[in-house]
Length: 62
Image (tube, rainbow, N blue to C red; front, side):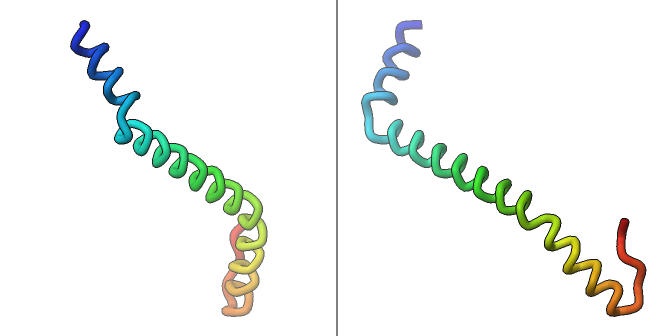
């Protein structure tokens, strides 16, 4: 148990632990940006694809 505590303490003190946390924060921020962009642009993209399908003579999705 003490070994695990010291290992955790070393990770939190060292630069490697800070770098891992920074990368995790960046990945989370990028995920939030992607989700926001898809949410905002989703309706516009559906309209664009439906107009393309209609122009090609197909039936757009509901």
